[in-house]
Image (cartoon, rainbow, N blue to C red; front, side, top):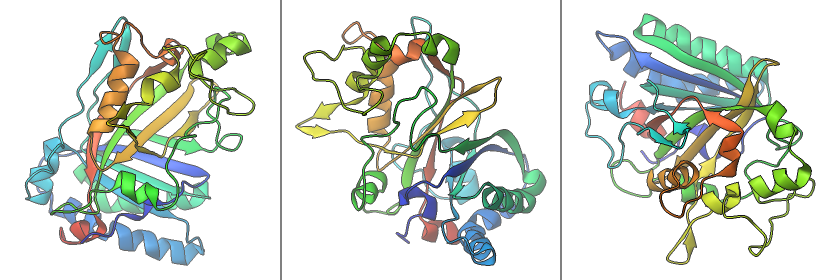
Length: 302
């Protein structure tokens, strides 16, 4: 029961596909069966394509958890709560299911997504579908390295997965899609960009605390409690076209609390009068929360 779904702890591929869905009215048995077979469906296509790094996970929202699983909710699974302060917003948007696929290949991702959606059929409606890509190594479209502090190796599971109890091997998932104002950002002189992030652009070196502004992104999201830094496992990716682009942010965590505290320090200025300077150049347009159960839990839904 405790084996996690394959996409969660693995290193992200060069390409990601992200689908948020809402359930239709009526019988959810076909949906349960499809979710139960997602791991085997993924493995079968990976073998067919000779692409072992084709990985997937599916997560379920609070509003449909009981209806879909027939089980009690994981402690802490609640709908995404919107935030707003001084023109900055973190909206909550409709979503019952979140499908996350990543691999080194766009075609493999799309083939798997089409098979899953074909199995789900009219039982779901697509809210949003986004294809992400790795940009200049691991840089965001702002030009800065994204996810420098992401856990590595065995620490990924330590951060992302529930350790024990009926939901062991599962993970709380938070997502937001951000739209960047790149013309405004690119119009900033380099020192101001680096001050907004809290790191150097070329070498990805963190600024000393003496010179790092309290509004720097790093200063807002790096939070220590009882001598320990709060962590999440990110699977974020740039996405976009010439008309709209930004960052698709995903956080997996053993608890929903660390992400929520980071988001509040980014958006709200009530604590110390500061907010995340980066939010002056990017805005969240979606927000949703889910729980990705273990592979064994999924199998039990069949």
